[in-house]
Image 1: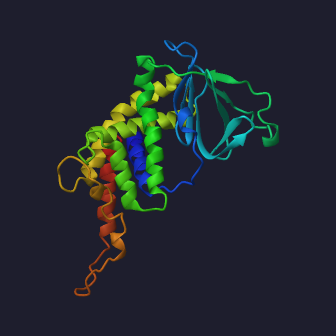
Image 2 (image 1 turned 90 degrees about the vertical axis):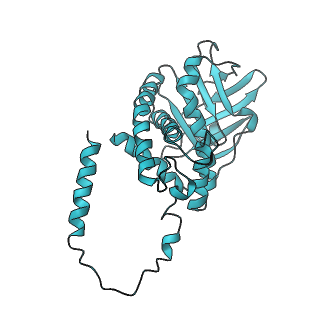
Image 3 (image 1 turned 135 degrees about the vertical axis):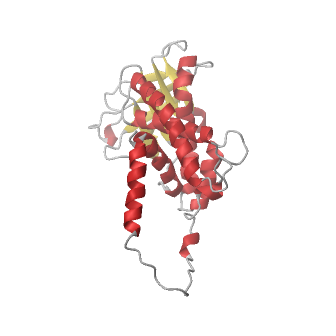
Length: 279
C-alpha cells in the first residue's frame, strides 16, 4: 500500500513539473521496434518524441529521457537526463532502424566508437504477450511527454487539464478510479524500466502495481472527490493548488483561537492513517 501511495504522490507531482525542452525524435521513427522474430522477439525498443525505452529478455532495461538530440554523422544522438547522461544513437534504414549505445567512456568526437550496431524492424502484429505487458507502459510514456509539455511554465490548471486529457479513456471529462489505476500501472512499468528491470522483473512490477494501482486510485478519488460523484475533474485536481490561495482574504473580526491542541489532533489522525496504510 505504501508503494501505491508513492505512485499517487508521483502522479501528483506531474501537476507542477516543468522539464527542459528538447529536440524531437523524428516522427517516422517513433513507436515500437523489435529485434528477432516478430512472433517471439528478442527485444523491443519504444521511441517517443523525447524518450526511448529498451527492453530485452535477460538484460536490464534502459530508459532514455532525452534532454538533447543532435546530428552525429549519419545518426541522431540522443542524450539522456541524469548524472550519467546515457546516450543512444539511432538512424532510419531502408529495412528498419539501427541503434548504437556508445560506451560511457567514448568521447563525443569519437562516436560511435566500438559499440555494436543493433538492427530493428516493425512488427505489424506484435505478440499478445508483448502488448499485454508493455502496452500501458508505452502509452503512459507518450502521455507523460504530453503532460510535461503542458506543465512547462508551472501553470497548475494546465497541468491538471493535461493529466485529465491523457487519462480520460471514456471521454466524459473526468477521471474514474479505473482510469487513474491505468495511469499508475503505466507509471509502475516506467519506474521498473528506469530501474533497469528485465522483462521478467518488469512483469512482476506491473503485476504488483495492478492491485496497488486500484487501491491508490480509490484513495486518490476519495481524497479529492469533493462533489461525491466518484470521479475527479480538473477543478478537483487543482482545488487549493491552482493559485487561488494567494488571495487568502480571511476575516479581521474575531480573536485568535487556541491552537495548542491542534498538533495533537493532527498527530492522532496521521497515526490512524499510517496504521491503515501498514495493513
